[in-house]
Length: 427
Ligand code: PMP
Image (cartoon, helix red, strand yellow):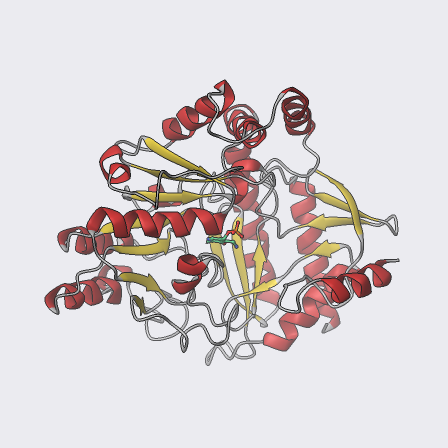
């Protein structure tokens, strides 16, 4: 019945809708890092960055169900849980970011972050890095430059978006660049724009190069670019939709790892553990300059049920050792993958931090020719062996390793064993 479900889906969904796998299993339920198909098989979910607490978290289910039974309505009402969530979220953000807008998703959060920056500066230009994905709404899509997600991404770019080179020390123009000598094109571009009379409203980037393959930004990269955009009177927007919420292990926010504080933060995904919840966090002063046609309002953004989900997630981060596991199991997993690279030349590099790792496959370690077809075949074979995994990056040659933050060490080891097996088979 898995195939029947795919056929029904394909008749009804728009063709553009993205799916995992040509022939996916039909997933019925999940617990922690595991998913169970209607075929009775258990799959290890190594790609899911939407559920840091894992699937089927009993505390989250109970809290949201209780809230749905009690009251779930729009955020115009004065309701305790909503205010409490906003306070708690502001509480985990660094000073002076103390003001929160609640929305439903990552795309809404990055879109709103951009619009807040445009309003706060009275400007229209935005600098964004290449190979980025920030969302599908108008403004978030405009600054999304990844050609893997959209082959026309660069050709169809609106004129207010200024894409700049990807800070990738592994591949491309900056290959092998010493971080200390790294000259971010973004900072130069910002200065050029300012000099040409079009100073940008904002620089937007992930604080970890997630979409490009889980590549940490070079040291001081954000410090240099944030300084340049602020000097030009613009704002620094951090897209923390993937990198935030402890994904990198030792840092709750990705920007902490870079030693900077942005002006505007966009969060979603992990914030509700799969229950729709996103937010923009900024300063009171910046927020005060944002106006929509009327007042800002989202019917379901920050609803009582979403807020209770958000509170449960923050409680779990406080009480359940998620970040510690991301750091420890992440380091263990990275070490195991690096050991695998010594035996399998197809692995060109193991990127990443915490539980956000990228295993990059190349046909040749000298030329770095991307092993795109091999990566797709490896993912299909891993599925047969019970591991859910997907390619990422502009060349679709990187395994995006980002399991729920509760992932057990045994599960991480199982993934490595299955990957070893696939690579030994010759996929
Ligand atoms: N920003 C980043 C970095 C993302 O990875 C995503 C989702 N992949 C988004 C924004 C958009 O989030 P959503 O899918 O919740 O709209």
